[in-house]
Length: 543
Image 1 (cartoon, rainbow, N blue to C red):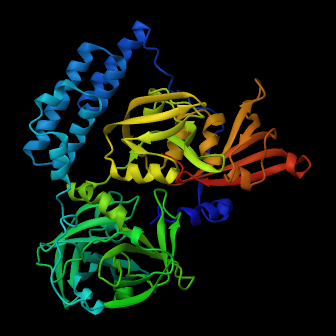
Image 2: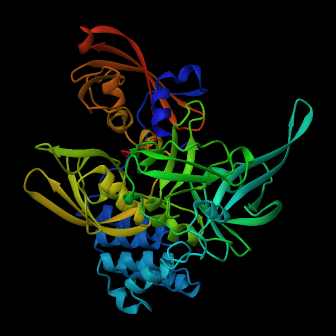
Image 3: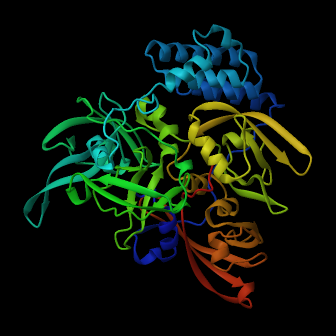
């Protein structure tokens, strides 16, 4: 759950010295920062060609995209051959998700390989979406709300024995889930089954489910796919589902509408609670928004369905603030429907990443696109020459007017694919290019801190743009600008403030950064002193 409650962890980041263990980091720029490739210089072209050939075996689609940027015929042909081999391998395995990803990329760049494919992108996309939950399958049965309980299960993760104070205790995780197909596919939360897929976990865990109609029998199950960013997982058991839920549309719900939550709070199976939708746009995830509900939710409810009066799943329960009664949350079913093809494909779900940071652009009081406020050196966006100040208006044929639009589109697109992007520079200049969607890092801000100079990395991390003011002291800067609503803004920093970065520290898992800054704050009458500011190294504004 460490990545889901973004807003709460952002608030507590300001008080981290008393709560977390930090390791020190020297205040200096990294040794190597990526520089744009000058394709007009022959030696730079040769070096890039070598790097592309090194990339071929690991990621043929990315290599092909970079070969297209290089415009070298020999390199492009080698990449096309590797991509076709990867495509044919996917088709042979009936891996329609990856086959469609490759076909989409080839279609985007209008590759001559398209005529060599055994199936076109439209056919493959249709096959990739023929997965449990999207076929419209539903069991017949009573329309009484109480009958829907039969489609839910209790998730039981047996972690063996935990020893505390010299005594052994049964160690287990209990959650909830629900059937989306007759042949035993079940949706739950990632955090419920996290110990089964976490490579760092030292426990030997086993996964079971209990049917609502038989609370005594533990039935073995296995994890198919999981998404730690959106906190969803797909598991499979070899039983025939007594009831199959249909996936509805959260767009049909608004604040005040009635909903029901079904699950196993603290292990109490067959529990149904009711309430209303309190809000539909809470920013608790680093990707997308979640619903706030007031139906009673407790530990063990995680992964259960949140349904309407017709029994359609409108959301997946994922968290409750146990110290605050009635403050509970659920993942909109649209996210589940977008992710089911990649969950069904198996393993960890990767989300796309362009290497940018930005906010919704406001013009004349209206949303007009996604303004780029930072570009990570060496990222896909930097390679297609996107600049700070550019405004993204379209991606993959979908219009972008807000950050939320971009998040919704990226949720549907597979990482490691190539798509069209359109962006505006100034008032009149319009650009269109093919951009590669990389894999979103677990902590984008950490990658940026390690891979870019401090003056630039402070833009996405703290929201302040710095300029160096001393050639003899690399720690002294002046604030050029502050992003409204950022950590720097909320901490009282403003344009033209002189600062000196005294120390930078990271917590043990590199998810939080803490900086000690000596500042003369203009808003406080140039009162000087050392301030400490902290920030999460992930946020909804990275894309």
